[in-house]
Length: 358
Image 1 (cartoon, rainbow, N blue to C red):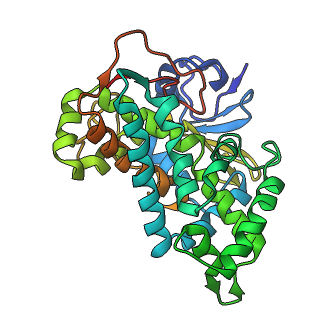
Image 2 (image 1 turned 135 degrees about the horizontal axis):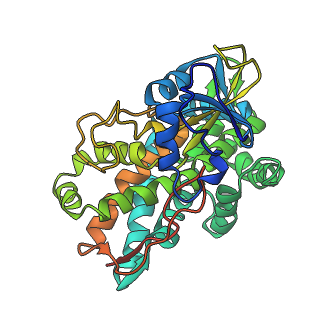
């Protein structure tokens, strides 16, 4: 029996299958979980599942549930504090510049794949430009963004070696790029160490990785599937932030966010892993009217997490400037005819391709 029923679960409800069996279409399972199993332990997945909007939002804000892994969360907090003033200006300018360069490259084409040719490259191009890294190292930076910098990615030591001479030059002759801002930043204990600068750059590259690209792909897909809404945004770009929040509600790039309980919380024991099902919570009909519909102008998209941190900041900037650049360079942008790929990953979900006519 893959899922253990918790106290209070109606006996008449059939036991749902594990999350691992719902890769192609998780939404029927999400409905079952919200209705009959709002708190349940999934043995094959190895986590307690939370599926309702209110429960997921409360868990994400509860200090008794800490992020997994915690080390990455610490680097994110450091970078969040560093992205102020000149650093934020450098990042914003890099996003805008990179988006227009990539969009103009597509302008001469009749058909393109926005996932492969725009979404996966814009976050990398942004990081390279914002940090002032050598353009010829873009492919290497892209690999770090896509494969990660942890033990499995194997890039942490390589990144430190790569940044060493660049950091030394920025300390001696700072410029206006984000790496210079980090190298000249000071705390109560003095300037940031080389190791701290490397961790902050690593956090930015992590933010510029797969999650941001997936979120951008889903955002563009939602708008291309809603051409009338897209035309409103073309005329009124100030509404883009709400359209972006609505896409994150309906189609988050990560359907599952893991937390670890540092103490017992109700039926959840200390040390247990808790899976917050963002993909389910964002479509909870008790919170949202017609939750499966994409509505770029929904009055309250109800974000599950606050739009803070380097990941959220970079993703939001990428969405706003990416859409603006595409609409400017490609006035006839529309979906290309043909079959559409379905996501093949439960945790990370987004279109694998996004064929368009330009």
